[in-house]
Length: 274
Image (cartoon, rainbow, N blue to C red; front, side):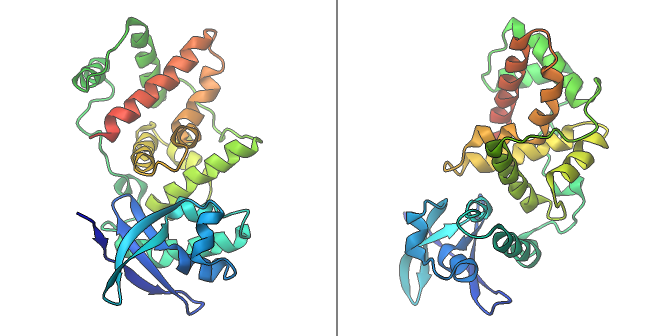
């Protein structure tokens, strides 16, 4: 059975109407409305031609079911380079301030209350509890992974010194994926303005990395529902793996670095199914 989506209308300060769908994976805006504001020369048909990350939804307009192209936050952000970055940024600021809060069931902007704790049933400090959980999800734990699990828990609970400053990068692709990660974060924590601030609050000043990890879980789950995106590359720019990297780069055994990354993706996959 075909699903017909309900949409809501919002008036932009340019006097244009923006139609919004509250999809399970997040808010989606009609592409034709977005382009009417940020790039009127590009109509809805050209959105596909320029390879923007769009979805297709069926909606009821004038008593008829029609198919429309929609853009989520990452899709709109991907237009940077086609449209001036300042124009995209200004539009997304309007979306976050005028639209996102209306669809939020929880309006408190406190970080701990805005992130859904999907791992609350697991006592993280206890290695055996985590191992038993992974077994319950059908994951095999090899002997070599026991040491990796212990290292992972030390890092999550900051039992080893972590970098006080946010790890930097000059790689253009990494910067692009880091920005995509940040755009998704802003759908949960609209008050966050940049990646460095996020690192300071959830890593450097936090007692542990559990909240930062919860953020990764939420974003990983979103990305699994949106196959157009490079899930692994975006998550690699998330807070946890970026925090782990300076530590694991110094490990004498290079294989441990790779095992830790693989193990973390294993955990993400398990929790994303809960």
